[in-house]
Image 1 (tube, rainbow, N blue to C red):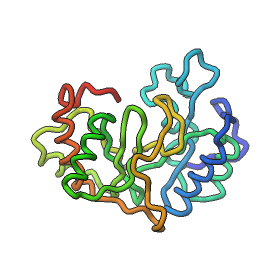
Image 2 (tube, rainbow, N blue to C red):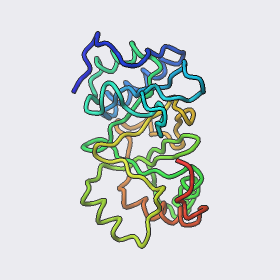
Image 3 (cartoon, rainbow, N blue to C red):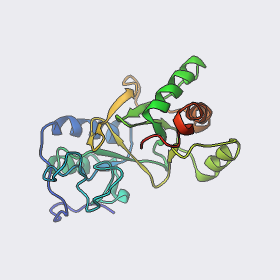
Amino acid sequence: MREIPGRRRKFPLLRQGGGSALLRAALTCATEWRWPVLPGVGLNPGAGRPGTCGCPDPECVVPGAHPFDPGLLAATTDARMVRWWWTNRPSAPIILATGGRAPCGVSLPAVAAARALTAIDQAGVRVGPVVATPTRWTLLVAPYGLEELGELLHSQDWVPSSLRFHGEGGYVALPPSQTGPGRVRWERAPQRRVATPWLPQVSTVVDALVEASAGAPGGGSRLAY
């Protein structure tokens, strides 16, 4: 599925400042790192309250930070398409389509994720890029399949409900997108000196994330999204 130039949109064009930075970031992801991206739905500046999603769902749980039109299958590494999208919607969030050959992700609420990163650093374990919003952090990891993930989770005594996996068919908003919870940023930025950012295996980080959640309020299961 690919958006056709000139197609009538179901949401308002968002032309606030910062578009050039988003375009540059989207092109870096798509053309240098070969990460498939597409524009997110964005926020609705005409809504009665800040942070309202541009999609039709008034109860959207990831405001602004998800695909809508085009859909997730339109994600691409084609520079021409990326330029067309962000020229027409310069403030659209950058959405990474996870899985396949693209990075996957493991995320936790920000409090537990910060604790987990400290534990991982103290253990001398190398992590890759970490995407952060005010409420949630996502550790990007090498692509994994459902079978590998199932075996990994089966080996755990307990997994918090707040731990989320972004694999095949999933997505993650990337910096410097503006979403409902706030600005997306790099807590750990990809190394610019290499052509493709290095990514750890999912098994490397899950143990530390689960352990960090166990020490969080309510076992990590009552923390905000």
